[in-house]
Length: 210
Image (cartoon, rainbow, N blue to C red; front, top):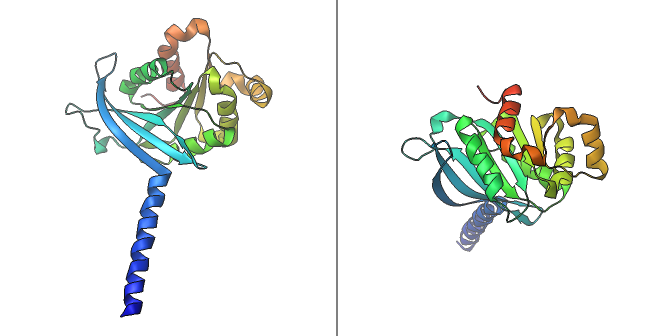
């Protein structure tokens, strides 16, 4: 009898540890419903990932139906991951909100991490049920451009496109840009007002918009 009780307690402890481990990997947070500039409804969810012991906070933007829900019938969609300077969320989020009605799911993150952190974050997001395989696009501002370019170079064909906003690249990232820059979308200071339309054209060229 004593052995049976010990076995049951052990099984319960293992189950609890498994649940804690899953919670350590990803955490979904509060949800809100907003309206895009075009009037479409959008669901915004806080979604954080734990990578290498560090928490990377982000927001997920999904299209909503007339009831304000994300229909399961839609299935996986192309996804854009926008890496930006922490605390400066207004412009990145407004860009993503404008793209969601085109049939895109967006994820924004104020990023301060290493190349491998960015690569691991992208890999984790690409495995989500809502992410269409082979249709992941990345946007980065100057604050984390080096890390993001190096991460995209690591992942290679897993990333379908990269847009750099006001890039100021150095070292290995700059070498990659000089070699493959024609494949990237570069948005300079003078182009930021047209960023949404430029990204839409880029997505269409690469088969993300139908």
